[in-house]
Image (cartoon, rainbow, N blue to C red; front, side, top):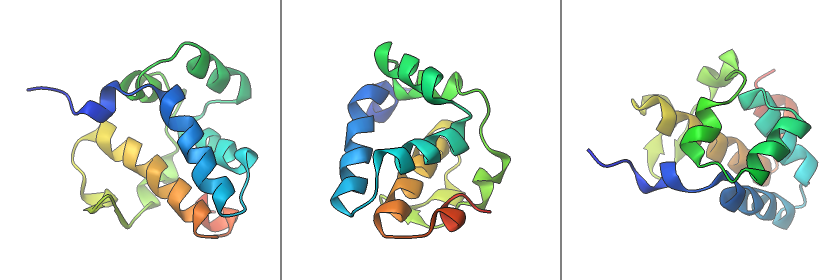
Length: 116
């Protein structure tokens, strides 16, 4: 079975789109980074390494230091799918990140986005 195209997209090509979406709604790159750090366990240095190495999304999530155990609390619809019902783990993780950036752009408070 062929991999979904999104798996082969580089994180470095998607990352600026996340920032652009947030900034258009008055949010910041730092807030996008905070979401990525919370979800994946990357820090500023390791995130920048992934960007510089132009890893694809599959590699980005496979190499993530740790996926936050509270990620399972992320619920809702993104791209027409309920994130909590996506069976493929990698696709679910990608959509979790999409959903969190979406919530940021919609003005949700960081405490709620980070499931505190």
